[in-house]
Amino acid sequence: MANDSLTIQEYLHPTAEWMKFATNEELTGIEEIKQNVEATHQPIRDLTIASVITHGKFASVDGVVHFSNNHILYFCDVFTFTSASNKGVVKEIKSYHIRK
Image 1 (cartoon, rainbow, N blue to C red):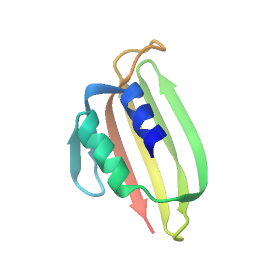
Image 2: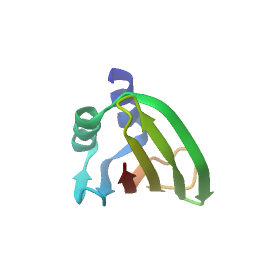
Image 3: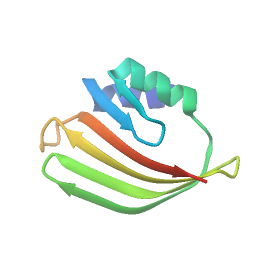
C-alpha cells in the first residue's frame, strides 16, 4: 500500500472530495482519502474495465472488480480534474458501487 499512498498524494488536489454514494460517505482531503483507501483495501483477483470516457476536465470509468475473497464490485467512478491539461489533478470523485 505504500506505493498506492504515494500515487494518491501525487494525483489528488489537497482539498479533493470523494463521494461514495453506496456507503453515504463524503471524504475530504488527501489524508482522509488515503486513510479510507488503506482501511478498505482488499486483494484483487481480477479487474475488468468496460469503458473509459473523457471530455475536457471530466472522466468516468466503469467495470467489475473480483476480489480474492470472492466478493464482486460493479463500479462507475466519475472524476473531475482541476483542468483539462495533463497537469490537472483530481478535484472530485463520485463513486457509484454495487457489491455482491
